[in-house]
Each structure stands twice: as structure tokens, then as C-alpha cells.
Image (cartoon, rainbow, N blue to C red; front, side, top):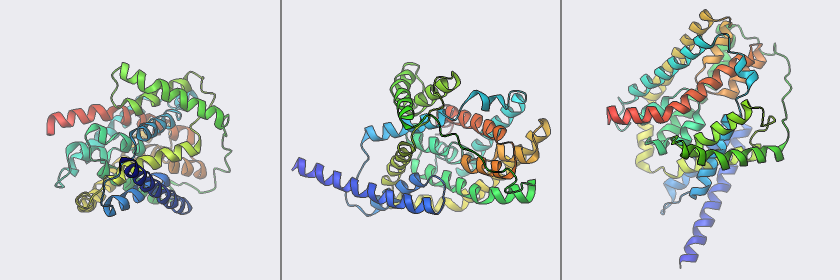
Length: 354
């Protein structure tokens, strides 16, 4: 009987994964952000609501997915990128801290919605690092279902509105940046070795140093260290592994949905939409401050402070003739500040508000 039950669960999980892959392909065709995470979320949500028995992703798969997302984020760091903000480091740092404070304020506003805890509200509104925040949300005491939906609602709005705002308000000229040549890196074998080293060393090192969420932040910091030390050779997580990691995190969140959870998220959407639009506008204000205190153009500063949608932001910067290196540097700095601050933020909110 036990073996039969194990086989039934394995078949059930395999069918959900197949459905997630199908949704991922459809969303990829539509050019939506993070299609594999959304694919896993949708497939998991449908199974979570329709299934009579609960279904969970095996813990080792979840741990590996968190680690791979950490490695992928850590690999964004390099000396050339960070060198772009060396001269203006103080204004950039102040704007980054300002974004964190705006995220906390937005999260406190979300507390007006019944059923939203301080930690959940703050994590749902953290401006940047949507995939990392979603992956660590449950471990830090937030409702990962609410966090995932609201984080990617913000990303979707930014992807839609940002190119229009960049052209209409900040003078971006689509096509003026010319074609860009992507750096293919050293290939997937080196990327696989890079990811394996970061995973093997990251979590144990983070536990030794008592860093919170060691399965994500440990590999992230090791990957960043290897990049900054010139030891990575430009390697990155192979695309299929990165896709699988996002899909697993989406499944983990989706499978936890039930009807009550779905109703809670649905009731929060009107307030969340208003708060997100306010956050986007406030971050544009920080962009104006950044432009006034540095040599960055209004377009560069706006794109650098846009709260999320990193790859869409870079594509707009490259296509619109902005300084993509400066934009990436500010975005990556903010990404690291948000993710490394998240455990401290969660602890403080639990202590003061719960």
C-alpha cells in the first residue's frame, strides 16, 4: 500500500510538472516576465484547488531551486558594473536606502487589508528581487502566496508601463541604442561547475556564519565573491537549470493555495494595485533625485530606480540609448540590499507588529 501511494504521488507530481512546462511555453510565447515561475504557480494553483489530497514538492528540490536562484542573482555582480557607480556611490546608496524605506511604508499600507501580516505586506512590496523574495518568503514568516502574486503584479505593470514612460516622459528613442552583442560566457559545462561549487560551499558557509536563509543567500554571496575575485570566468547558471529553479519555486507556492487563500489574495488586489502604482511613482521621484545629484541623465536615473523587472529595464536601456552599465549597477546594488535586508526586516516587523 505504501509503495502504491508513493507511485500515485510521483505520477501526480509528474503531471503537475508537465502542466507547468506547458504553461511556461505559452507564457514565453507571450513574452511575459518569469514565465517558468508563473507556469509553476498556475499549474500548482490549479492542482492545489482541485486536488483532494495535498501535494508537495520534495524538500531537496526546493532547496536546490533556492540555491540556483541565489547563484543566478550573485552572478550579476562584477567589477566593471560596480565601477560604474564608484564616483556617485553616496547618492546611489541613499536612493537605494530610500527605496527600501518606501517598500516598508508600502508594506505598512498593505496592513489596511485584513489578513495581511506586517511581514507579508512588506515582502509583497519590496521593490526589486521578486524571485529571491518569493523564494525566501515562507522561511521568514510571510505568506508566500500573497508575496508571489503581488510581487509579479508589480513586475507585470512595470514591464507594460516602463517603455511607454521612458519614451513619453524621459526621451528614450527606441532603436537608438543599436544592436547589442550578448556575451555567451564560457559555456554550460563551466556554468554547471560554477553552480555546483556555489551550491556546495554557499549553504554550509552561510550556516557557519549564521546568515539567515542560508540556502539562498549563501550561494548568492559565494557567486558574487567568485565573480568579484575574477574566479568565475564569466560563468552563470545554465538556462535550463535556471528555468527549472523558477518552475519549482512557482510550484511550491501554487501547491500551497487553497480556496481561502485565493479569496484573501483576491480581496487584497484593489488595495495592492493602488499601493504598487504609488510605489512606482515614488521610485520615479527617487530617480529625479538621483539625476539631480549625479551626472546621470533623467532617462538613466529613471531606469536605474524602476522598482523591478530587471531584464526588461536593461532591454529598454540598451534599445533606448541609455547608459545600460549605470542602470545595471544601480539595479544590482539595490537587489543585493533588498535581499540581504529581508531577514532583518522580517525580524523587526515580527518584533514590533505581531
